[in-house]
Amino acid sequence: MKQKESRKRFRRVMQEFCECAMHLLFLLCGIVSVAFVLFISVYLIISGIPAIREVGLIPFLFGTTWAPTAKTAEPSFGILPFLLTSVYGTAGACLLGVPIGILTAVFLAKAAPPKVAAVIRSAVQLLAGIPSVVYGLVGINVLVPAIQRAFHLASGACLLTAILVLTVMILPSIINVSETALRAVPREYEEGSLALGATEIETYFRVSLHAASSGVATSVVLGAGRAIGEAMAIIMVSGNVPNLPSLFGSVRFLTTAIASEMSYASAGSLQRQALFSIGLVLFLFILLINAVLNLALKRRAN
Amino acid sequence: MEKLSLRRRLTCGVLRGLMYLAAGLTGALLVFLIGYIFVRGLPNISWELLSTQTSYLRGTVGILPNILNTLYIILIAMVVALPVGVGAAVYLTEYASNPRAAAAIEFAAETLTGIPSILFGLVGMLFFIQLLGLKQGILAGGLTLVIMILPTVIRTTQESLKTVPQSYREGALALGAGKFHMIRTVVLPNAVDGTVTGCILAIGRIVGESAALLFTAGFGLVLNGFRDALQSSSATLTVALYVYASERGETDVAFAIAAILMVLTLLLNLAAQLAGRKLKRKE
Image 1 (cartoon, each protein chain N blue to C red):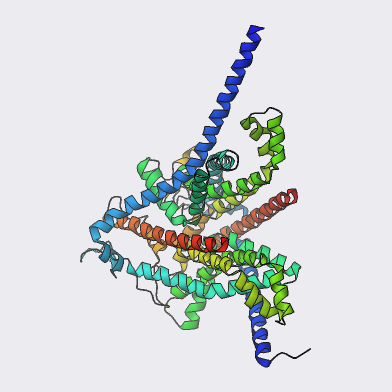
Image 2: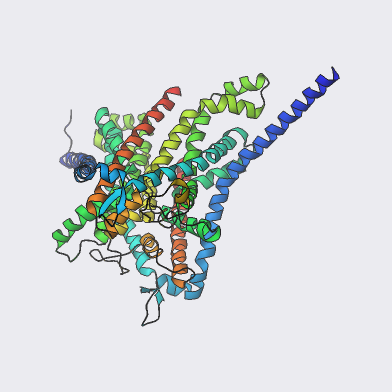
């Protein structure tokens, strides 16, 4: 009898221990994902700072020549060409992609017959899943020659081509998120507007789109984030030369600067450290975009 | 009915036209993309391409190593990310009594989704290769991707954990089950579909990833066994596409790989949709 009792107690202790252990294990899993973010931030900052220190913040950010391996002259580490190219490229892609994306989203959410909408919706989802190198491949084989011919250029690999590729790549995020926001608009708003004599089109664009504006803003920010972080598709179509950006000139983005030079920058060299600093600048850009996104979301919650 | 003014009719007409134009453009774009890739890629897919490795002596190109590398990377990334991701999701929905901790984890997961993959590649290279001394290869690449896909796994699992009715939990606890016992036997089995959806999405991301793998998994096109591939430079399908297209000028091979990737993307999309539908039906 006594033995049975103590065995029972032992089992209960064991069970409690097990519960406790599992609780800790699950907590650990959660902590790991937080740790990764902290770790990435800290690591990017730590490895990005030495080169900025050595070159100097102003010459690094605003220098216009990037010649890290120059032999005859002093090597120069100015990333303004990359910075401007990334900003222009993202702005250009948004300029083209946002109207197309929002119009398509309105069509899908409001005007399209359900069957057509379902087909286009799954098509858009597929568009989002296509690997970025595939976009790059189609870009060099279709867009580059087409633009070369259309504008009589020496080479079609230029900022314009990159903007076009980026436009296609950010369309899915803009369409998906905007459509979800548009669907969430209360039916009464639209009915009210229709009852007051507005046409359907006027209702969609004046009332629904207005009511969904913070969701639409979120989609644009997401699209911009995707555009500024894209590397592999545009490395193939942008010519990859560190020029100050011009629409028909070969350019290099922040992302492609890292991708194209990392493989041959020797370990410990200032060039390699400067590439880490470019990574840090890119990271700060993304954090800024995230902050804007959170602000938009908070406004929506209110 | 009173007729609308000319200006209003004009605005409506133009807006409607633009709307159809935009939707048509999006549709046409997709049809063109898929058509173009298949037309240029499918004729170049041959058994030889799929079953051999590139040989300079014979002058032939084969992508078997890249197919295997892709599978290896999926294997490694999923083996690590699945338990950790599911664990984090369980903690968030079942245990987290401290809302601040839960908020911190969710914020972290969301921030992770926004980081561009080239930065993952950069950090992966710094940490796994420079600091831990791994060689470029499947192991370093797979571990880098773990960080990338964690948020996806966490979020989808969490979504489906939330759909498990509270009464199931209460019933199990009332019958005397411990918390972990309850989670293992009642909650998790009912949340399998969400986890499966998350896995499919994560695999889709791994298959399409290239920038994060350039410096972590490397460019190697040589056939290796699993254990050798772990620590030797190994290109996945996407990286191989990049190498063939931009450095070797083998456009036909690149298009063949692109066609294969498109088929994979289509299949994974379909699978995710099916799993998602099943999840929705349960709700």
